[in-house]
Every structure is written in structure tokens, then in C-alpha cells.
Length: 314
Image 1: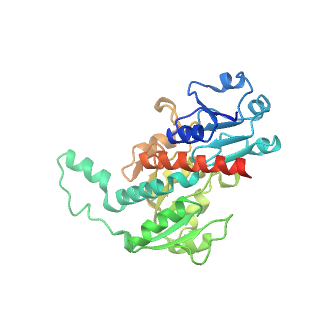
Image 2: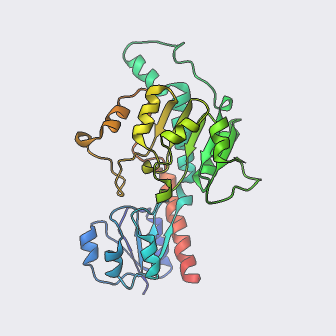
Image 3: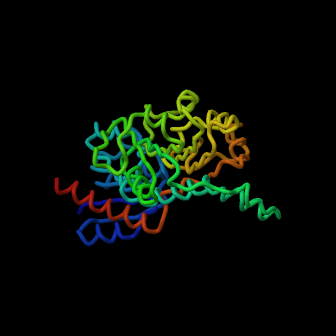
């Protein structure tokens, strides 16, 4: 019997579909790193989000493990290189939440262009500032997407449908000429775009991708959106450039200070940059929920099931 353990929140479709195919599928969301480390070596597959890290020590304790499915896109909590050395396949489901993230990007963008958060605050305080809150339309801006894996094309599709000019750059994967977004260099994006949206995974090469040097290369004041990973952005640099007016607005669904379990620091230990960011009116912050919808939960499970099937059919 092929034994798979699910240790994180996953749509029930996955366990139901696996059971129908003859897998022994167990769900236990009480596991911690230490308790899983000492658990019997009886699982061929592990399904996880970000409940605990999967490092060399844990992998060595489970020689029967053949694959890991990370529900979602990033695999920062998994030592992928060591897993592969151990013959363990690492799978993920970035396709599952692409539409959800694209819609969240649109929400952040609308907050920036139409002053939604600040206008709401003003009305609640008794102010009625119609002229001050006059906005601009999506089609009047030029968009640069950095990263074009799954969420980048989904956001490009949304923007194109609203009449926008969209450019995209991906350092690892060439963008086909027939893509929704126009292929561009990073220099092109810095020269012509006044909205820059990040759609990259976190790897060492992407640490602080958005920093003072990058920001100064952008030829005009711009809006920054980040729904990818927090460590891609130097928060202190963003704060400085928000204060200086080089960044007009920042819509951030992810933060530099998140752990691999996707939890932010407690407020009492926030660094100065986080404290300043939280008090700015030209910033909107959400708690890493861009990809979290009822629909994406189901799609993640469907893609996970499909990839597990493909793993056994290979």
C-alpha cells in the first residue's frame, strides 16, 4: 500500500481522490518538525505547505520517502538540493493560485490608482475630498512584470483585458513572442514602466532584487506591487524611496520579515523600516493572502493529485 501523509491544510479533494486510486492517505495536522522527525519511516509521500522545514536531518530520518508535494509555489522551507541527492522528488502546485494572485494584484493596483484606503479613512473621519481622491485609469499606465512563470501571465491577461500596455522580463525563462505581455529587458522596464509588479520565486539570486540601485534605475516615479516573496524587496530602501517620492505607492502582500512558515514578526519587535512602512498612507499591506481563495484551494489539490499520478506513471 502506497502510504502518503498530509500534514497541512489541503482541500479534501486530494485525500479523497488518492484514496479512490488505492493510496493509503493519512492526514495529521498535529505534526511538528520534532514529532515528524521521530515518527516511523512509513511514508512514500509527504504533502505540506509551510508547517515545518524539511532539511537534511529530517530527510535522513525518512529513507522511504520518495516525493514531497509543496501545496503552493515557493519551496523555501525544503532543502530541494539535498532532497534530490536522496532521490526524493520535490513537486509544487504554482498553477493552483495564479488566477487568485492576479486578482489580488488587481485589487492592490486599484487601491493605488483610486486611493481606496486613504479615501475610506478620510470619509470615516468626516472629510469629503473628491478632488484630492481623483484617480487614474488602468489603461493610462505602462506595466512591467518581473517574473513570468504562472502569476505573471495571469496578471498580464487581466491588465490586457483592461486596455493596458504590459511588458515582462524573466531572467530564467525566455518569454515567447506570442505571450500576452511584450518581452522586454530589465532596462526596458526601468525606462518605460510606471507600475512594476513582482512575480518571482525566492532564491538566493533574487534576494533584495528591489533595492536602492534598482529603484534609481527606474526613470520615473512608479507604483510597486509585490505578491511574490518578501525577501525579494529591501524594505528600508522602499521606505526611503516612498518618503522621497520615487515610489508613489507600494502594494505589498508579502514582507521581508516573514518566516518560512509565512508568519510576520510580532509588532513589538518590528524593525524600524516595518514600523515606518505600517504608518504610511501610500502603502497597503495584506498578510500573504494573494493566492488564498476557496477556488484556489481546490485547484491546488487537483494539481497535486495530477502530479502524484504522473510521478507514479513515470
